[in-house]
Length: 423
Picture (cartoon, rainbow, N blue to C red):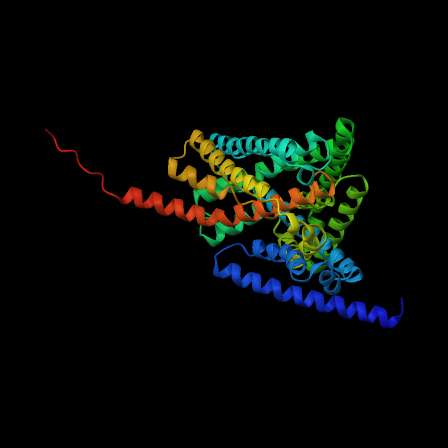
């Protein structure tokens, strides 16, 4: 490749990145107007770029706007953004919220994960029996069933925390409850994802091998956490926050590459590094914030590549049935499961229904789970697309549904009870 060709490709890449940055800014403004988490609109914008270009001018236009060389650079930057953002997501999961009644947390967690898992099992049954080759694919049935079930049970801690902050619920009992429940649900979900990937790559033998790799990663993360919790590491981090952020980013990328080499998705490496960061250390707050912001800025590019390479060809045969079933079952499963669990835990009906609505916030955690399943060749492009749409729709509906339920509950409580005339 000549110097002129390199310069031309670099210029094309810079123009593409600049155009995508403008689209992301527009998405953030739109999200602010609609009182939605900005990350949802950023990701949705990235996803629709490929299908829109495909619908306007076909594959020729897609290749002209984002040729292979430029797409490779965008893919690399997007993958870096995904890993960095997931490091921040995992660290936020580890931060321990305020203590709550164990019975309430236990029942709400059980309802918030078991009922959605059952709803996911219903969707998986349809996928396996009636979904067709484009949706079903050729992955082992147990892997597909488990991953689809997990996909409907996820709740995203970072996006949920953003919704709670925007709605002024962070320090309320209902806000603290759903965050604690989401932490437990996400931890269980990642373990089930590891099992599903093992089933997809080599049956129970593959599951045992990948769980062994994951166990080794957990031990390494525990050792890293012990080192980072020392006074010397904390002092260095407080003195050089940017250097600590750079080291944290490099560690996350290295861990992701190692686990991907051993058969796990790169997401797990980022999750383990995020879990390794000390939860109660104020010194690491700044570096984690730097890494998370960098990842959030770059991660829409990852979904641009997904939209161009995966979803562009889906537009010719949109899996509407899969989208509808996934969205309805996911929304009803979380709302109903969260409600039943909270009611068994002792919450009144209105508060229990609000908890169920908030637990529908799936966000980037859900998308990371889906990406792990797609990279493991368990999810087909059509099923991946349907579940991504489900994640975006249910997350976008969480806050409006909560506000609507709260308004109805307050109105019902304010209405005077008519007196019954005595005979």
